[in-house]
Image (cartoon, rainbow, N blue to C red; front, side):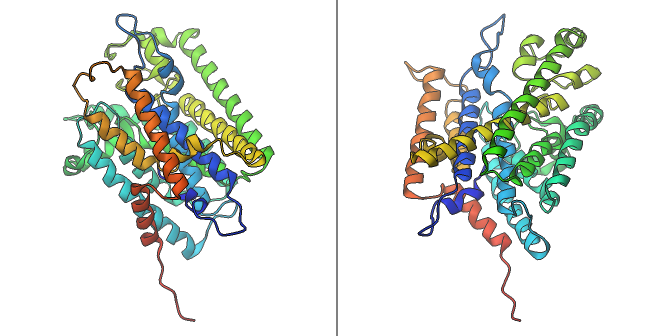
Length: 411
């Protein structure tokens, strides 16, 4: 959720151009931030008893968070070597910097986890993803593509086999709440929740960072690559969703799953369109055929990963257009996208102030969202114009510098 790769674009030496690639990446990250805020503040299901999915649930649920994770992988690729990744001591320094950055994110996430809030805070999972991806930072494009393909095909199957064993433990190895500092006292349950039974299962989500690393190794400033990302991402996303829909609605998957006990209260048909968070996904192999948001299946990972690639390709093309016409119209999104750690944390803190409380008189969910969204855009633009990092971005950057520091050697 930090934007380490965008830092050089804030202060540019005379005579050098700002990379439109970085502007497009920041803009995509800004869109992901606003999308996640929408799922937090506006309903994703309609009223009882139909529980029809809303447009917010259909558009943003599952896709915004996945876009964040893919962008994290792209950012890591840009900071650890583009087409040619760093090697040797230089690579170990980069890994140390990423690990220190992850530590800062984890501390922020554990702090936010202590708030009373009806938001699944992603930051601790995000930090763990950074640590899990460290061994892959030195890989080139072909190896990353093979790892990403293998992970997307196998990880959901392994998770399906492991999850029942974790849930059958006494007590179950599942938190049921956002990770916080108190959970450090039960590390086994915390690790199981983070990797398999929680809101954002890290084991499957490693796929997104591998996809992002592979994308980041491409020549992202070239028009052909940008178009390739958009078209192939869209095609993969559409195909995965079509196959998942056929499996559930035509081949009998939904009927088989509806016969299982333990649904969360919403109709399964609606949940398959919006969000499977809260369902344990055990006792039937049909769960693996779903492309539903937050299912963590192969089809879900392909769909959301494809959407993320398409969004990145689109915003890279828009960044190129902005440079050609010399109008930075992407600043509405790239401004907040360059300081998402700060803005996301501020958003969660504000939302916690209304937990289990009615909204102020005259306010609606939509009004609350647009107020926070416009505030995020305004703050982001101001910081961009002033060429400032966000406060938490500055802290994470300093931690990264400290972690990657190597004293000079005398020859």
